[in-house]
Image (cartoon, rainbow, N blue to C red; front, side, top):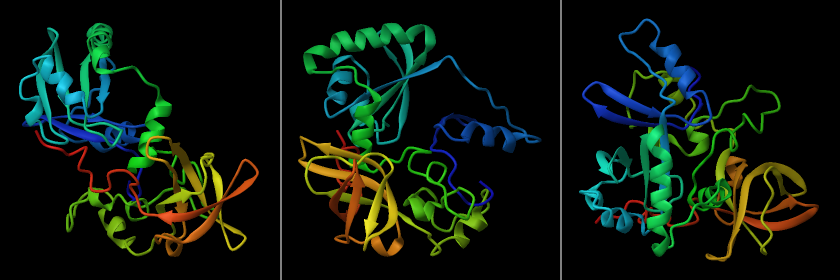
Length: 286
């Protein structure tokens, strides 16, 4: 926004020379775009007939190739294509919310039910099953995928300031090309560099009991931060969480405790992501 603060998690797809599709999250993306468009030569249309079915995991590309989706193996990370799937027009993008190689299938509302049923039926022999949002929460924790507003000051407000987090605090500054200027809030964005009030960072806990959302993060007997989401992975054998903590605590190995369910669980600060830190799985080619 104008304050240089993060307000929504969006993906912008360029679908033509002067045509874009914006998939916004649970923040103010749509409202802010609508306000910014006023008085300008641009039309914004809210499409409530567009459905998004997410197919995620290392076998997703093999499955789609078996369904005769042309060029699916060559589709780069964060690219998209217009194609047909089981006789229905779809847009498939190589995006997702899991940290794995995956795809999102955008389709018309009248086709969504049939595409879903066919996907479940044909995918069963490969182990493809429906899942719920809890699964995505676990995966996003391991893979450092933030979920507005649940990791933000909108949920955990500052004591004496209005809500709003900078990209530098959230670790999302990579989303702005270095040296780029002229965008909304650009001056404030650059002014806030080096003035972080906290950092989003990881914590690795002892034991197997995950931290509850909103668990206090304790250091030297005082609360210094908040664990926004926690999970224990029986597959990767780690008990991890995403936390808001002071900048000087956001250093690998810093010892703290998490107060969750009436217990103080020892933890250390740990860099993010916990899983596939070089992002080789989600960006794999071929």
